Amino acid sequence: MQYIFGPLPSRRLGLSLGISPIPRKTCNYSCIYCQLGRTDHLTNKRELFFPVNVIIEELETTLAAKPAFDAATIVGEGEPTLYLGLGDLIEEVKARVDKPVAVITNGALVYLPEVRADLSKADIVLLSMDAYDQGSFQKINRPHGKIKFIDIYEGLKIFSEQYQGQLWLEIMLMNDNVDEESLGKYAQMLRELKYQKLYLNTPVRPPAEPDINPLEHEKMQKAVSILGGVSIDLIHSQGFHSEITDHYAAILSIIKRHPMNQFEIESFLKKRGCEDIEKIMDRLKQDRAVSELEYMGYLTYRLR
Ligand code: SF4
Image (cartoon, rainbow, N blue to C red; front, side):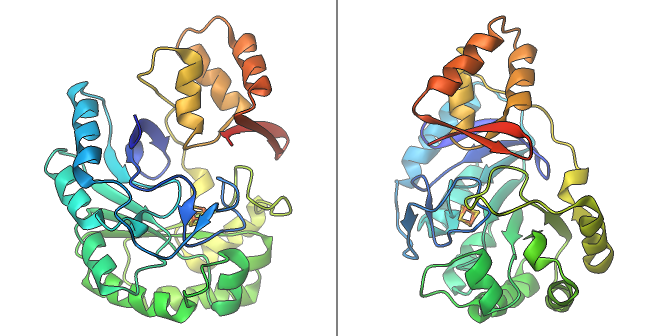
């Protein structure tokens, strides 16, 4: 499968059937915390990377096997609003699934009326809002040169007013954007937006830059008390799942999109009744296509 993956556990969406309409690591940001590593293809040009009907054909093949899932989620290994066919894709997916259709976006293109129109077709838009001014934007998201923080914020205000679906915002908090001043600025921005949920997150998987650290629990609690919302580390996800019968191929198909730590892989394999867990862990360590990264005291695996 090239475009459809999962269903994978998502702390916000339950079991999420993923739809990726963009080439890997194609984004208009190169966030310091990105779990995919640094962005390979930094672009702000919307393109029809793949025909909508080809993605939909693959979705139909997947749906024929009747997988259980809670939401169909358009989420690239990069930024899905760069896909020019996004609006059509949402409509075609909605015509085929009876579950909510969600889009996970960094929100960078929400200043464009046509992107707001595309996103308005989804049932749920999960949008990241990590910065509160141009300086923090440059530092955290490292955007493509043409994008301005103020344009995004103004576009987001319009979108939040007009959107009829569920707008769920997420802020990624790290030690350098959680001081009193930063939290005060986020709070000011949030007062001007209409949204249904706010998630506060912190990097729990190896980030693009090695000096980025997850927030301590007390600081996260303080942020929750000022901004409201839910700390995402308090939400538990369901386990990983794959329809691929070969254990090793199943892991590769997951870590292509979603890094897994050693404990997640072991529990995934145990649940499938695998008897060669050690052999598979050794194979992962030796596989040149796989990166093994140490973060927060344990090993995480992702595809290079
Ligand atoms: S975290 Fe998302 S928005 Fe940021 S670089 Fe990675 S894919 Fe792009």
